[in-house]
Image (cartoon, one colour):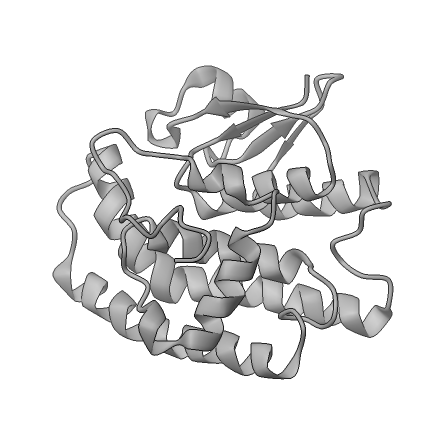
Amino acid sequence: MRTLFHHPLSPFSRKVRVALAEKRLDFDLVVEKPWERREEFMLMNPAGEVPVLVEDDGTAIAEQGAICEYLEDAYPTATLLGSEVALRAEVRRLVGWFDVKFKAEVTDLLVGEKLFKRFSGQGTPQAQSIRAGLANIHYHLDYIGWLCERRTWLAGDQFSWADIAAAAQLSSIDYLGDVPWDDHPEAKNFYARVKSRPSFRPILADHQPGLPPPKHYADLDF
């Protein structure tokens, strides 16, 4: 069986999980704690990062961006990139925005500080970083709202990698209750639409022992 080595609160793990489900590909999940640097896992990905996808024949694909490109190349029928050249470029641009800019300016400062430092024993959260993440998120939610006012989905008329990338980051932060949804109704509506997709619902069932999410987390109507 196809297997995804992941961590439940890793946004990139969530991104790949949703894409596999959107492409209707069956897979098993194996929880990996990357900070443990388990030898067998390091052999699959020397970078020691989740996710890693292992196909039925044993082929291992590491690094989330490479996994996403692989899925699009290997299973192109249910495309998440789009068929038009301009749309594909816009999808890639927005994926880069959420994978790099949003992650660095928001997710790493909130999820990274509050959760992964705790899990990995890397010290106490830095209050300054958390304050910066809470401030930065408004800019990104405004941008999501701006896109939603002009398009059906973030990149255009089709649900795409861009929407998955955005929702994966948002869902990890929402697990902490740190997304100010009431201040950003357009972004809230976008996330509710993604949340309601069958591919996304298993994400909302993930719970970290000893750290329950807020009550609205798994509520499809908030």
